Image 1 (spheres, rainbow, N blue to C red):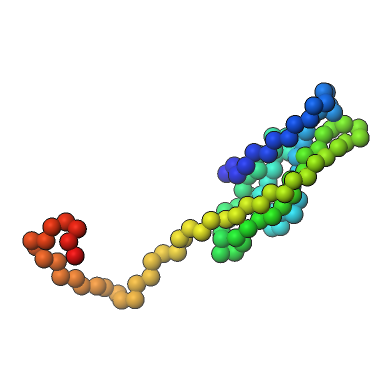
Image 2 (image 1 turned 45 degrees about the vertical axis):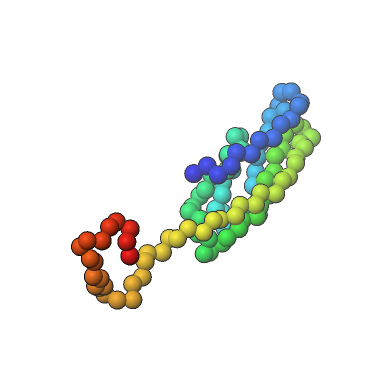
Length: 106
């Protein structure tokens, strides 16, 4: 699953203008970055109950002989989803429903 697409630009031409990407501070290795495209993907599903925020660095570097790089911080906050099944205190429930009630009546 694609999370974000990192884009860096270099005004140099030829190999000096080609950019590759890397990611660091990604423990456990939950996110992968395609070193050519900069697309960050999930390696495994996220669970807010385990880790609610990931803080890592994305590095873009050119392919020149004296390679230059730039680092940016990537923070991913995991939203909470109700992923737990409902729990009932009783095995069964009984309710009386009036036959002449209209829809939405209580």
